[in-house]
Image 1 (tube, rainbow, N blue to C red):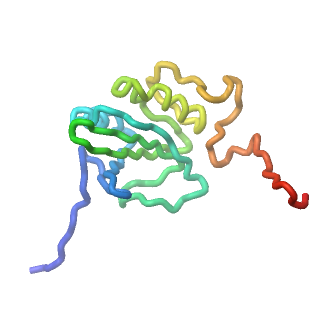
Image 2: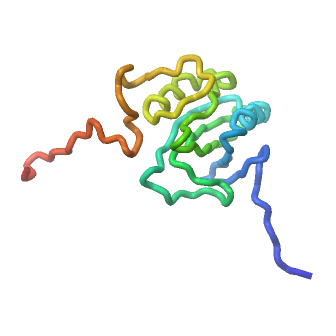
Image 3: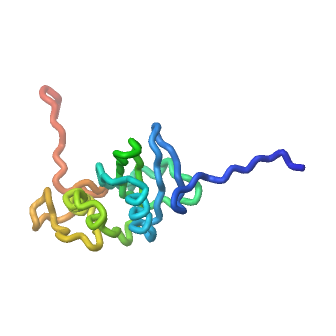
Amino acid sequence: MSSEVTTTPATLHGCLLGESRGQSVLFVPRQSYIATMKKLVDDGYEMCVDLTAVDFLTHNARNLPEGVAPERFEVVVNLLSLSKRERLRVRVQISESDPRIDSLFDLYPGTEAMEREVFDMFGISFTGHPDLTRILMPEDWQGHPLRKDYAQGRIPVQFKGAAS
């Protein structure tokens, strides 16, 4: 009889569940994003506290569970269950070649401005968003300022008294 113990990774609604800095983190595949988020609403996560993105172009070494393929972009959603007094972070990998994901607007109307900001700053589109237009930059602005490969507008830092 083998004494080896194999542990099955924790999951929630078919998605890998991890932990980071004392908070539960759910790694959701893009194709099951909305279905999983609907289940989380049913679980009592009634508030979307934050929705943002990260560009990992220059930082490939990040902590992902086995089975989650890293992509250049990651959409990060922070949910709160007031009734259970719990937080949950949802992380979704978004490819550079197809930077889009479904909108959470129908489930969490408060994400309207957050999704517009991610679109404006990172160029990630949200399918089904009611008004996916720029929110911080002028409408005719070229590029997405929070992408790691965005070079336009860089201003060199000048220190007082430093030799030029």
